[in-house]
Image: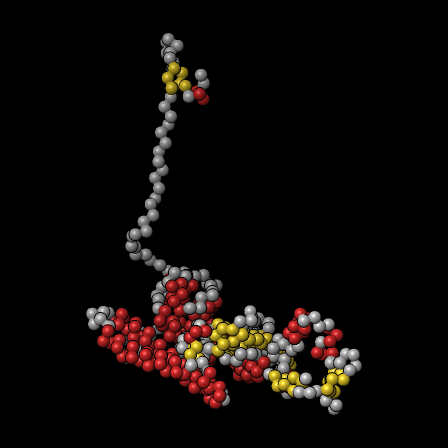
Length: 402
């Protein structure tokens, strides 16, 4: 037999006998085990965590050009006094802006993400700012965040990254943190506030004296926040009732969890507690140049205030303002004719035309085909027949004649 058949031919005087060969023994590889239970001290170059062209570095440099003294109001940690240093507003601002640019917009999520993400770790210097501090920052001194927005906008304009040639404006409905069942009338709000005050008064008696300070403070904080929301809801209710007629006051309701929210019609035709966010952006780079969160249920009455905000934020008025059909009302067109900005918008009847098509109305009988004769106070239809005006109905920004 051949060696390939596993037989070794023994040499010897007698021609020899054959014996089977032993297969080579396979040895188990020796692998390095990963020990994830160990604790190590490691030297780290914090400055080298992120490259020189990382967006976090650009944000840090940009904020260094701005005045941040508005955020120093209320800081009790000052030079010459003992105590822990206060978090640097520049770090908090940079962390929020960097997180928002990556789609992280909630304090707890930002805190968790910042503990391992290299850009955040570079901004924090391997430190940590807890979510309570991050959330409290959003309630900074009045006007501080608005002024920060304006300062950032001016930096972008000075660098040629934003211009006022054309500004687009639109509104969008944002769902509030409230359910429809949270809307209550005055009597129910007063009852809930009384219960909240009684609950807060009993907390000190019910809490375990052996518990830690943090455990004692958590339920107190929750009870105080609920009491404050109910107080705000009652104030909002009174404000709405003042705007209503006496017969309508009893029907006014507000949310206990989000008092300023309003029931608004959504894109799917339903209604939900919402806010109306009015946003203006310059057309070249899409930079936001104005914003406002409103309680308006429809958009047409918000254009004048939006144009005023743009001028306050940027200085020069835009040459053109681009809007959709929801803003092209008679009043907005008249206001634009006397203003410095040209109004460019869709025809306000475009939505009605779609409805007319669904109802089977031919295009030659759309509303713009009917000519109004002001002197005779009547319309002429496409077939030449005269339609006499019998009644008028006031609508938002226009008068409907029938």
